[in-house]
Structures are given as C-alpha cells and as structure tokens.
Amino acid sequence: MVVILKRNPDKTQLKSLMSWLESKGISVQTTVGASQTILGLVGDTSALDIDLIAALDIVEAVRRVQEPYKSANRKFHPADTVIRVGNAEIGGSGLVLIAGPGSVESEEQICSLAAELKSAGADILWGGAYKSRTSPYSFQGLRAEGLKMLAVAKRATGLPVAAEMTDISQLDNFSDMDIIIVGGRNMQNYELLKTLGACGKPVILKRGVSSTYEELLMSAEYIMSGGNAEVILCERGIRTFENSTAHTFDVTAIPVLRQLSHLPVIADPSNASGRAGLVPALSGAAVASGANGLMLTVHNDPTHAMCDGPMSLKPDSFAALAKKLRKLCELRLTE
Image 1 (cartoon, one colour):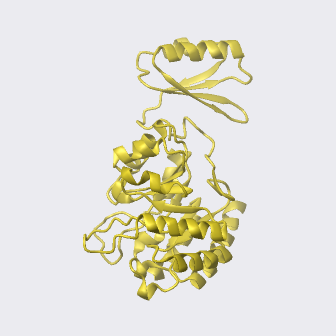
Image 2: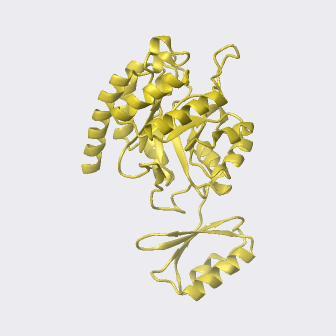
Image 3: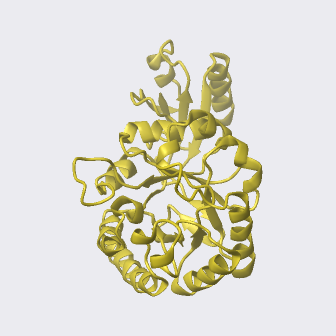
C-alpha cells in the first residue's frame, strides 16, 4: 500500500499515523520528493481500512500495490535511485561504463589493463576472481588472490572495483571491493542475497537466463529487505531457441524494468552475445533504450585469455566504443 501525503503535512499528525501503522506490524518506508511525500507500507496491509487513512487531513490519496515486490517498486519510490561509487553515479542522467577482463590472470595483467581502461574512459573496473563455469574442468579463477590483484589495480589507478561473489563464505575476501556482483546463476540464491542485504556495499544483480522481470525484482527485494537499498539490475541475456549467440539479448528488459522499478538498470552485452563483434551494436541498443550503464568484457590479449576470450573487446576497441556511446547518451538526453 502507498500513502501519498499532502504538501507540508503536520508533523504531529504524521508521527501519530506512522506510530499507529507500526503498531499494526507495518514497516513504513518514507520517500520525500520535491513536490510530495510518499509512505510505502510493507507488510500485511489487508486489514487496514483505506477509507479511514484517506480521511486523514494530511493524506492526499491511498493506493494498494498489487505487485509482490515493494521496496524495488517505482510506485513506492517514484524518483530514480542514484548509486554513487567513487566518482561514478549509477542511475543518474549520464552513462557509467564498467569494464574489465572475464578473469584476473596476474597482477601485471590487471594493472596494465586497468590503466588502459581508465585512459579510455572506464568509470569502474571489474574482473573475474571467483568464476562460475559450466564445466568443473574449466578455469575457476584465482579466487581470493584475484581479488587482491584487483585491489592493487584499484590503488594504482583510483578506479572503483567490482567482482562476482559466488558463495556466502567469500564475503570477508571482498572488503576492498566497491561493488559485489551476483551472477545470473546465483540470482535466486536467496541465502546469498540475504547476506548481501547486510553487506553495506552496492550489488549488481544479474538476471538469470530463464528468469522473468518479476523474479529479478523479487531477488532485488531480498537484498533490499535486508537493509541494502543499493541494488543495480543487470540484463545479461536470456535462454531462447536461438543458438548462434551465447544468449539472446533482451533489450526490452531495459525500458520495462525502468518503468517497474526506481533501481538503476545496466546491460551486459558481452555475456549476452558471447561474441566481441556484436558488442558495439548491442551496446548502442542498450544505451538507446535507456540503460544507465554497461558492463563490458575487455582483455588486452583475447586470443590467449584464460576464459571469455571470444566475447572480449581489445582496449583500443573499447576506447572507440566508449566515445560513441557517450555521444549516443548525449543524444538520448536531448530528446
């Protein structure tokens, strides 16, 4: 349920209303906008008398929210959420570029690549340390050592860093990471999501390959219900009957999710296609459809990469693409 208050509501009446709601076991989330204040009521509101609440002097309107996700719902929080990481603002009017290798391979590799990416316009560095692979015989990443190497690159370049966590037991190793990534395979790992609800770090939540928009938002709800409001939704391709690409990039997800939720929405066209040659076109489509940012796989030597080589852009290709995407974002903003 959403309670929309009139302008400049009486503080005493507001406090009384909130106390009464909380006595009914209802959690009240307050959103203060430029023109109105909204109370988002989370809990069992079925027994609440809408007419009674609507009759209060400070109340403009009362609406029931049918969707099962509450904290992530734009009806509860009409304004876009902006998440600040370093100098980057994810969810603002600009475009945030997150770039890095599918796997951290050595300190020299990640530091060299990080310097090139920063020069090329990347806002955030990411790198794979814990790798969820389809085959148990594939390279699984350098794990904790990979995170340490990312931290070295962070200190050397000043770029914020992001990495994927695959299990709750890894949390202590992520102290130097600025963003924690939840991969598509773990989107419905609810115990992991609950843990990240109390981690105090922004989370990039990737959509599972067979998950609906509502299921993605419900996973975000798990994190947010634990107290962490800094969730970034990521479209990374879905499973369809087409097999010429790794996955099918669902560009429709971007505008739909932005209508349904106030959370930032980014796209991962590298994983979606699995082919570096398709990344520029899909990146452009994502930006044109309203994506707040892109997560791109970049490697300084894709041919010899330990994983994800076919989807990896070279640093010079990323630099050229970054310039085009910034211009496209500027055109989007002028419409």
